[in-house]
Length: 168
Image 1 (cartoon, helix red, strand yellow):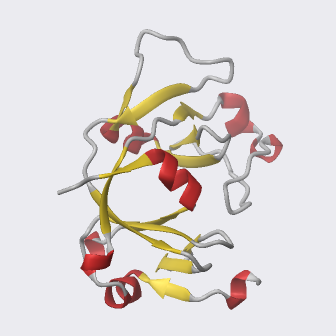
Image 2: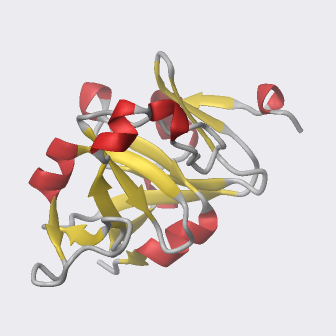
C-alpha cells in the first residue's frame, strides 16, 4: 500500500475518533545519543548521508542537533530543546568517537498514547506529516487541544523500548 492510500488524520480527527478512555498513560524513559552537527557537516550538508525512519534525508542545520536511538535510527531536535528538556546521563564521561553523548529527559511528564495497527498519516500542520510504519504506529499526545496540542507518531517497536506504562 502506497502512502497516498493511507488515511490522513489531523489531531482533531484523532481526538474525535478515539475517546480518552482508549488511551494509556506512559512516561518516556528513552536515553538517546545526541550531539550538535559538526562544522564539517554544516559546511558540506550534501555529504551528510543519514536518513530518518521514514527515509527522509537529514539535513544538518546550525540550530539542530542529531539524535541516535539504540537501533541506529536517526532524527533531529532543536538545540534549545536539548538544553531546556534534557540532561547528560554521565556528565563526566567524554563523547563517543562520533561526538555523541547520552541524554535523558530532565523532568519526564506522563503522556497519553494509543496504538493503531493499520498504516496512517498524522497531519499536524501544513508541511508537517508524520507517517506510521506499514504495521501501524503509536500516537503520543500531551492531552492538550487546539494550538497546545502536540501529537507525534512512533514505531510500535521503538515506543515499546522507550516508554513505560504508568498505572494511575
